[in-house]
Amino acid sequence: MTNGRLNPEAVGWTRTALHRSNLRGWGRNKRFEYWSISVPEGIFSVNISHHDYRANVSVTFWNKTSNTELRQGGNTWLPRHRGISDPRDKAPMHATRRDVEVTLTPVGLDTLLDATSSRIRLSLRIEAEPGHESMGVVVPWTERLFQYTKKDNCLRASGMATVDGIEYPITPQTSSAVHDRGRGRWPYFTFWNWGAGSGHTEDGRKIGLQVGGKWTDGTPSTENWIRVDGRLHKISEHLDWQYDPKNWLSPWTITGPTTKIEFVPEHHLHHLFNRWIVMSRADTCFGRYSGEVALSDGGVVRFSNIAGHVEEVQRRW
Image 1 (cartoon, rainbow, N blue to C red):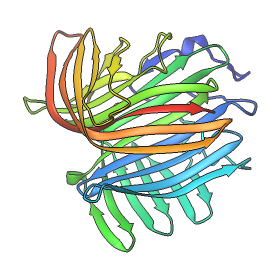
Image 2 (tube, rainbow, N blue to C red):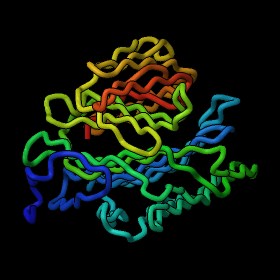
Image 3 (cartoon, helix red, strand yellow):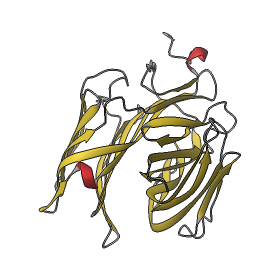
């Protein structure tokens, strides 16, 4: 709506980007773009976000062999410019902090991702096949607090990454990319789970998995779906996440009436930023998915050894 409140008719989900954010005012607005690119050597991630009072830009590399993470970037307090456009705009998005610079440029269904820092450089084209579907969903808490999120996977990347002078050629055949876009106004305290993965079913079909929980509880919306050969199949029920916060590397289960998934972690990363009033904690595990999902058409999708991640995040923001 023109007053910046939630339009009740916008609540629901789509296969293409149809929603337009109209965030007004200052203080509670959240805008972010997150990309994760998996390659044989590890995982690159890029984030730009703007929360009115704080902006963040970061680029990271997790090295699978050494199980170490290199993180560049950080927060800017009381930033002057957003650098993040409306989801339906086609303008480039740009963010900087000291020696870290990130530019995201839409080109049709693709995205050009350029990131530079003192130790990491990325020059990538994130590629989507013609007719590629991505899920957009509006989660309503109240007419003043709501979130539009767009989740995407089964994307491919090409280009070059450089870490401490070492070059990593990236090809569509050996890479997989995940995108998380958000625009909304969140409650001050938030707690969520998120997981994504991509690979092939036991009978050889290409799949992408997207699951989430806790933050959507008590609303009519979920962000759960499975992609099968390019087509999204919505999982509308809220899923039950079970895991041991005292042992992040023990198996996780994600279940519901049509969903039985197990995630076996291989690596765990912990992040904590705490300034008392503003806090962000994230525990992320990389590993493998196995399980099955019953589709609305009566079919059952079974999969094993699907590479991906899960996370638990807690925020005061």
